[in-house]
Figure 1 (spheres, helix red, strand yellow):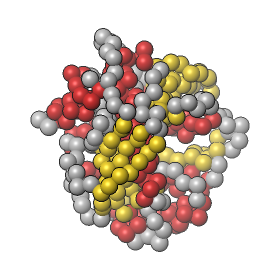
Figure 2 (cartoon, helix red, strand yellow):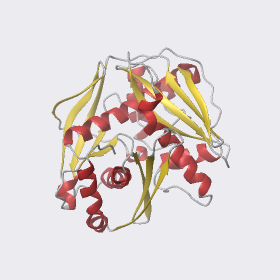
Figure 3 (spheres, helix red, strand yellow):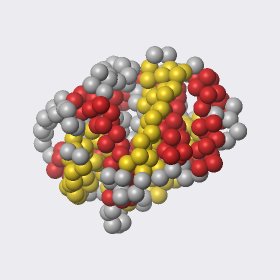
Length: 343
């Protein structure tokens, strides 16, 4: 969750008790201050929202402690609401529209009646975003789904040969490696930041997209540095932790962090694709559901030529044809069951 409005962030935090109560949940949070990456004080906050025995983690960072805490709580809400909706709950009012990216610009076209949702076996919080405005929630959900689509299709076409190492640095014994896709798609490069763990053999990751034609500066993607760093720090400090058993992606990411991903090799293939990225989006009005005085929206971008997360081995009669149909846009349909190491 991203917000530059401290007052709205403050209002969201003040409403935390009624939100938690509305969800029938329990919440605990923490916040720390770091200077290691920026040279200036940056707050990093965590929120753990437990609903019906499942815990959803949210992370946030900002030079403002209030904004960092608000972002973390918003992301935890996002993940709890995402699984609630994807599992069939329709108690929150919603609408749908078509959206996408062309030439590096996000567009929203018309209301959509397309409610053909991905199979539940592919449920994850990828492509979801919670924001204080409807427009921002749609844009962020579209960009997040685009981010993972570019990274996954690049990896499935040529593996690590599709990425170039941008820079590498070490902080406190952890090695950070910053990668960009060699070729752009839809006006963006895919970006990936690896972080090694201190007590385990694997890595955790942060993700971003970088606009084509713009000089790369790591300072513009510090949120992704922390996206890689925070789970590595958490896992190192909590050796008994295990992810939400309903989140197959989180389980596989945990395995990649603690054991390392499997080594996969395959023949390189030219990546096919169109110039326009298209998705369907669903927008939920959270303010009404939670009884808030400030606006709050959740959006989910899915379908079209977006590619769902492929980190977990999934099965089910409807899963294979759905993934194949998404990958077919890129000439990769036969690689539908390849586990993507970098997700």
